[in-house]
Image (cartoon, rainbow over all chains, first blue to last red; front, top):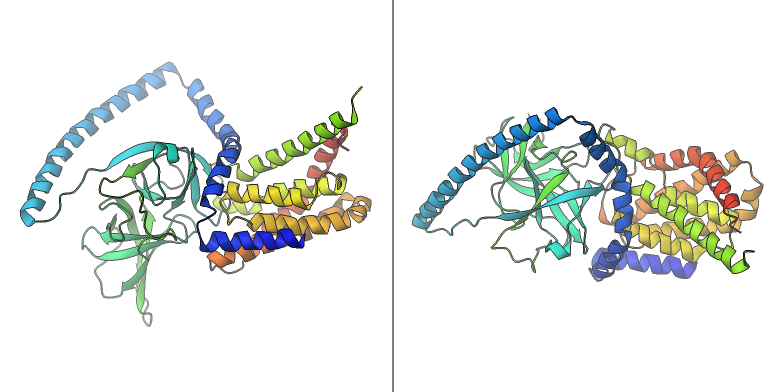
Length: 274
Length: 169
């Protein structure tokens, strides 16, 4: 028993200070993946049941709706392409590097970390799909988090609302740069070190600033929902609601930015900026 | 006629299956309409199943099994490798020392012991997590132990039924 206790403590220590155990862990994750798949079955069957029970008319209506939406989005994308080209020309005139187009793959959620203290989800894409640690994860509404652990067929994503996670952000209206840290409780972000004299209001949109080289620039992160100046305190208390549907999105996007090197995912502690 | 070896194999398969089911229960996502705090009521099913088998068939499942299962749970939950392994080894040590006494207890007396064991489990997990994460102790962290102790009689009866049905000895 003493031997196993010592061995456990040693493993904990190694896992905490170094990344030697990441590969055995990734290999073992493949073995436990069926557990996640089975645990997801009730959810999955409930969804397919509701799909089966929806009527033909309902489905038709939905298809029409979606087709309309696709047309709208196509028009918008077309416009976006023109704008991107124009933007790049202007950046060229200013002498700054052109913005690169991000590509993305869609992943599906297959599990959630059962610990309510930890905001983590498991997705069904892994190293075979070229997912890498530190990769940004989005949903259609905004930034969701980043990949922290990759195995062959699955990966673990730390959400921006986790207490151990911070995102460098920028206020869209005033270009003010801040750090948004997760709080772990509910779905709130906390803005760190906000001087009580700066220009920030409820309703301000936060975008990822791209500082820290972890997240791409310009994705929506959240909206400020509370600004409180307390006399006597050096910083204002500012919180934001994440734009992404952190607890509802089943499908997420994994972003590949061309100028980033997957072999160098940055600092190993999972925090960017900070 | 079943041979002794067949029986042993049956028993190991049965124990393995119950542990796997406990693992599924451990990561089962809560429905979306349930508030996240309910997650604190989720007992450590795996520890409970391990304790049951250690009381019932201590010659089949020992400290090393508990350690191995703990490592798998660490991979499953993404905790530091060795965290659950450490907790399960200590629980296993206590229950293997007490199994003869525990067998004599009524099921609610066992539940009380289970509360102590699961509480110890939570404390060890909290202690290891505090290496990486500097959060304070909250009484919420004992909720899984309370829930586990309350559910113990049913877990016990279900596993005893399975053990008799499948003749795990």
